[in-house]
Length: 202
Image (cartoon, rainbow, N blue to C red; front, side, top):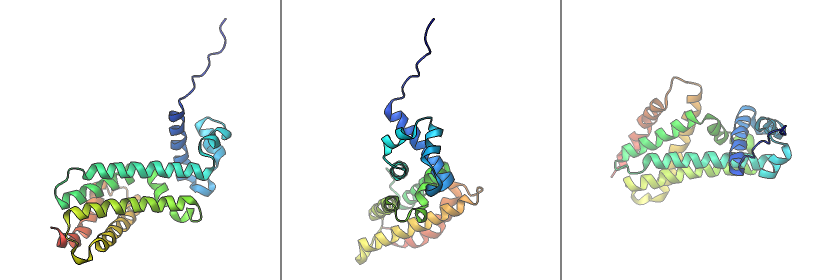
């Protein structure tokens, strides 16, 4: 007779990714305060001490989830605008990538937009870093296509903040309107934003 089959150990990177996916779902469902490491560990199928071994704390696990979502958002945005030679199409492509991310990665987007619930934690700073990442990307993109005049980088940074803030609110509104597709959200944003930006297009 043979003994019981030993379960194959999952590689660390694969196990960590599994933990992040489950944790992201729990944080999105329950919020940071109500989410428990016990529930996350149970859903993953590991012990709670193992969860702490990987991430040190619940806040550390949240930070890892935020970092992953932020990296994904940056990747899809940069890929969308790469190679664009027209200002309008570059902006449209970048905005559409953002709205697609918000629709298709709802749990990740949920983490990135719930900063009020995280004030007082280091995760709050991480969420602001995400916003800064997007404003920097937009400011650099606009610098390639728009004449900022004497105001220079101040105007570019202020405009980027306005674009990011407006699109964040629009994406939140879209969550309440499933009929508003990423393409329609992009059209709505462009209708408002491009009117002012086109005046400075080179």
